[in-house]
Image (cartoon, rainbow, N blue to C red; front, side, top):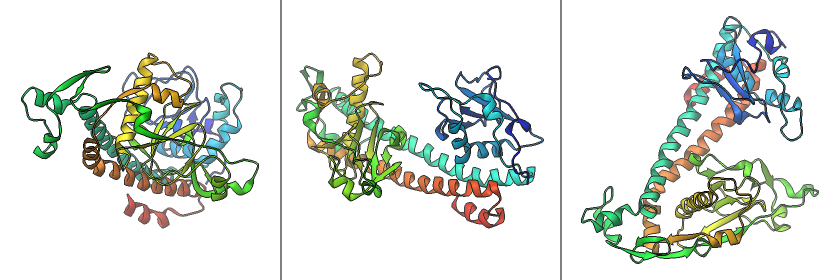
Length: 392
């Protein structure tokens, strides 16, 4: 195995002039590079290009397998190298020549392809779970919008039609007329309230960083960097952990599963549903619905609140959310039986998303453990291939 060839020896060096994307390219961000901003291009459209701030790595096929190149770039040690080469304060970035001069291990092509195949099978399973989550979340979100934003069942009954997609018992819950409110027409018998009146608002906190005994414990501690993709809904792990002493000696508290977290400062408006008991920092609020038990209705209601706030600011970025902000958002509040019915109707969807999240976190941990060992040759392909193939 060749120990430390430079990247420029077997892949085209990134350049501002080479931005047309081709199949087999690896794309990475040169500004604040991290693993979330690295992509392998498998089926590009003919006119795909990358913007300033991204580099295109194009493998030389006689020297390096395209997926193996992506595998090496995705390795955490490569990311650490990029971060170590960052320059600039406001927008720290890595220069193209620094990427070109990066050193990675280069085994023979057959071994490269085998390594890429094994790790790619894990990536494929992770991606399949994410696609399933996208479908499940979209169904739950569409149901929330239909019932509580567009009021489709009520409109159907008002027009003498049977509400679509529900049994007679559920349909019977919905009224067949509207009444005028400050928000316009809402289903008869439903209330219009401040959003803050529909939830318990919980603050967070940060244990003193100078006290080691408060940190590196086993209690997840949420900050905005831990917010999941919208389609993944749940947050089940965090970058930082704290101890029980950290909780007891700060203003944070442990949030139960089903609590909605909304980021209120910094990167504002990120929303997550707590998947395991965890604490959070003071830049977030925890929201517990007064009518729902599982938290599903409050979660989607909070996302609707964020959308409402964005519309009021005409899509611009708002820099903070306060308790007064939440008080100022007026929302439709259905009777509790509708909230319970929504939770029952979406439980199987959202709980499956949570299960998928646990599964792909396990797969990610396995991939990240195997990746540097396979690249370095410290473990043999024949030893891990049967295990990975069973999982995937």
